[in-house]
Image (cartoon, rainbow, N blue to C red; front, side, top):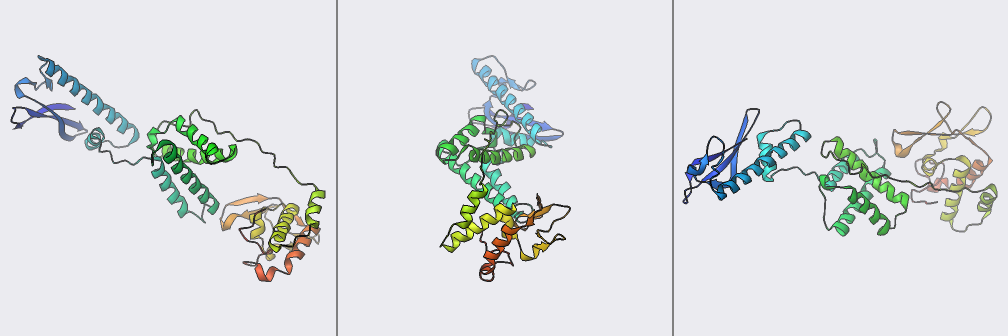
Amino acid sequence: MFFYLRKNRVAKDGTCAIMIRVTLSGDMLAFNSKLSAKPEQWDTDKGRMKATTAAGRELNLALDEMQTSLFNHYRELDRRESVVTAEKVRNAFLGFDDRKDTLLTLFNRYLANAQKLEGISKSKATIQKYERCYRRLFDFMKKVYRISDIPLKDMKYEFIVDFESYLRRECGCCNNTAAKFVQTLRMIVIYAKNNGLIFADPFINYKIKLEAVDRGFLTMEELNIIADKEITIKRMAQVRDVFLFSCFTGLAYIDVFNLRKEHIKEGPDGKLWYPSEGGVAHRRRQDLQRLRRLLRFPLGCAARLAEGKFSHRAQLHCERSQSFPLSRRLRF
């Protein structure tokens, strides 16, 4: 890097613009420093003012600061990019860096890619989880920081702590729900690090803590009370029946939803079995190829009872030859 005077253009006051020449691997670029000096006061060999006056010494200090800043921008570019050019150094020095490394911009790009994989390697529930976290982050920055987005390099430990506090204070999230949102934020930060957009990890001293939750369980006596309860509202009775069926079979709701009549077969022992491979049953969530192991189970008397309750309504309400008339809107 070198400073020189543009002597072919002289201003009315007799000064010439001080130019900055940056050379990298044979690539040379010159641009205006926005400073000027008189040719008779300029030392061509040193690329500085002749330090004979206070104004000259002050101008030399300004040039030294420019040189330091240019070197700093070069080191930063060299650390994050595979190829550094003189033009990139100049743009970074002048503030023309066109990189858009902000949190929500990157999150939105990640979300768009995930949406393209819905039904392939991402479930609808996963996409909805990402979208909720995006909205929470947007609202958090608007209300707390009064900004619409934040550069990734400006994300600090304090930002994460403030986000968690906002989730628990303003959104009414419990500890584990807030932790899940923070986990999604950390996923985006890791994505940014893997792409070389940031190098310092704001999560380095932050620990996500999930509290153990005792979900409890129902006794057989309590299940019998629920089973014997007379419910006049058909929709609520249906919820009760599906819940009891899941209790006796160990199937999650989505597994019962996807259960078809052709899946239930009679085994060598004369009992009805859910088909399996290699001794374990498999789940396909929302027709995805990702499988989850389930315990193999026989459909005992409780399952037969549930099947009997549903059989007289199956023709009216079943979708895609389901064993049970279920809707995705049902909630236990």
